[in-house]
Length: 128
Image 1 (cartoon, rainbow, N blue to C red):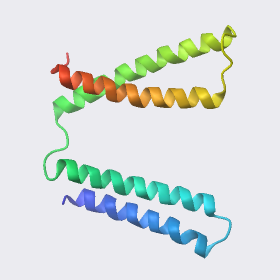
Image 2 (cartoon, rainbow, N blue to C red):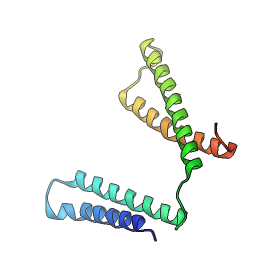
Image 3 (tube, rainbow, N blue to C red):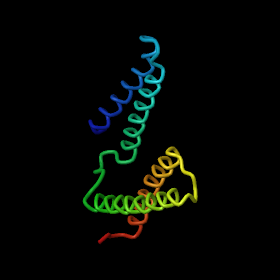
């Protein structure tokens, strides 16, 4: 196991354990405790999945970085167009938008479109 993965797994376990122990040590910290547990488990799971997926092989090379950056740039462009459309929809009164709905739809669009663009460019082959 790469030392980087071991350190990340240990850090995630320590943060999650601190989140579990925090309510017993202080009162009124339940929300902060659940945040710590969530962050610790996410760090732990990401490190474990990366170790399982890559083992001792290199995680990325120049081609993978270029395709990833290209997919993310297209995702940003799509999100910019989406936000412009949302602005005009709200400005013209076609649809009443709340901050929660705009943020959630933007976050989902950015994350999903980045992965879809990257998947498409990986399947397509070399990117200009």
